[in-house]
Amino acid sequence: MANPRKILLAEDEPALGQIIKESLETRNFKVLLCENGDIALKTYQTEMPELLVLDVMMPKKDGFTLAKEIREIDDTIPIIFLTAKSQTQDVVEGFTIGGNDYLKKPFSMEELIVRINNLLSRTKEQKHSETIEIGHYTFNFPKQTLQFKIEEKTQLTHREAHLLFHLIKNKNKVLDRSLILNKLWGSDDFFNARSMDVFITKLRKRLKQDSNIEIINVRGFGYKLIC
Image (cartoon, rainbow, N blue to C red; front, side):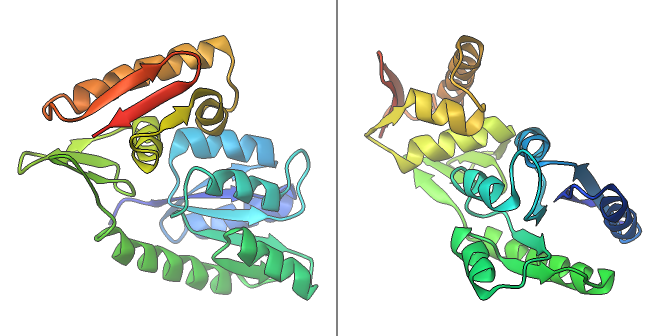
């Protein structure tokens, strides 16, 4: 049997959350159940799920707000919204934020499973062509791999991949230190800043085989990827 596909489920109704979790796990999914948006964001940052199922109405951080924050750092992960809202403007808002699908409560588990499988299948097809050329390197952000010329691919960590993605998006421009700390670490405090410095050092080592690539420290502002 194939390895379980990892799904993050954010649902504040304990009974419903458990029903969805158990139903999906019988279909060979690994489900990370979170009771509110704050926990869901932290779980997303550490667990690298392949798909998000987000209840819209949640305490601390609602599904729409959570999706907005995740879309700022990841524009590829599929998102399905679950909601009791039925107004057209709510559906429009969900898709505008970056949702891929919208399921109104009550819903059947079979329908949810079909929608999940469709999105994962579509995402798998897209990933094969989602590569970025940077100097003599090929970076595949969805798969989180970095390859120098025809050498073996290097598997990056979740944070390494996201940090490199943002550096490349801002190539030859300064990447604001505070902005990226808040996006990837959740805050720009001293300890997170030291952690980011460690990841920058790791990326420099990953990219050292191409002398035309350099990550420089712009004191007081952030980092710049030069290529």
